[in-house]
Image (cartoon, rainbow, N blue to C red; front, side, top):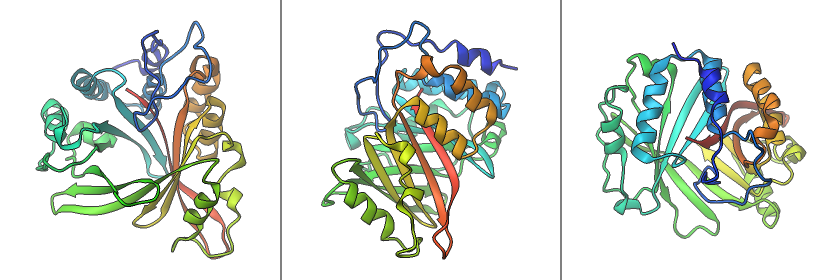
Length: 293
């Protein structure tokens, strides 16, 4: 067994820690870290505690950090009616001249994960991600790896996600990044011009929550079966609102509340997928929040 709660509470920040968002882009901290400041990995380990995971996840995360380094990999904790999962995102903007790729990930995690996929690391992807469910830690095969590529010619920063499975690659998502203040009109238009939303019946505040005011970047994702919306670089209090609204586990919410001051020197990124009925009622279907491993 492993005491994830104790491990979470021991994730103290260090003066040399970097401040990076879920794109590995640097930001200025919103406040000076307190004497008992914690890394965002504290929230990751607390989510492992909430899910009752065993030491297999510690072996996996240690293998990732040993290969990529500290604070170099983004993690996302995802929550829906189906339960929790964790996605790990590996960036290298050198693309096809990257230092480490999918083949390296499969090599360093081969004792923890079963995967028969054959990636093509000659592709010019700038990031790949792997979503881990509890079953993957006990032998269930890892049957999909996502890669993310640029989208040249777009008027806004954007990317395309492809999923690699045993049947090959398929297109999964488009992501569009907007400045939350300067491009507010474009955000509204991008959100509402969608086959998943009934035109003219959406209250914009049901999507662009007033409680997220101050977010620096808004990301709109067009996915296969529904759309998604991300708020980037928000404060710890806004993360708390998000976790409550998306019904994340109570003990995780309580941990954040208890350690708010120790975690408030970070900016956070959150995202959620939603469905919408014909009357324009929006229902969250899945939420995620992010940090650095």
